[in-house]
Image (cartoon, rainbow, N blue to C red; front, side, top):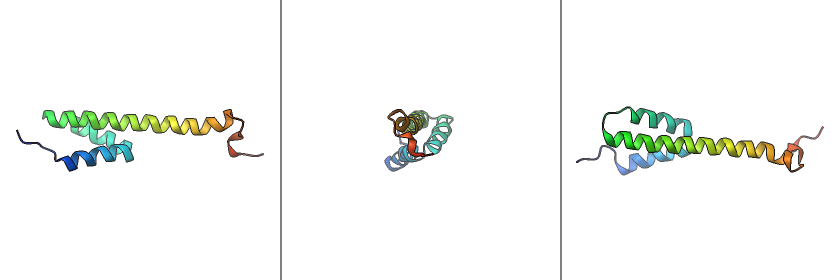
Length: 79
């Protein structure tokens, strides 16, 4: 059975999912709508990576916003 996607293409999809998670999520959804099992599996994995990276980025952003205030730093604003 011939592979539909080369290793380089798969790596590119994963890199895009990590660096640009909304793009990775879109690629994952598009791949999951294809008929062949290889596309569905790759799409599922890329979608999971994209969602995990997006959630981690949001958590880090929230932590970076609230942590200084919780630690008494005031978040960098001096009035």
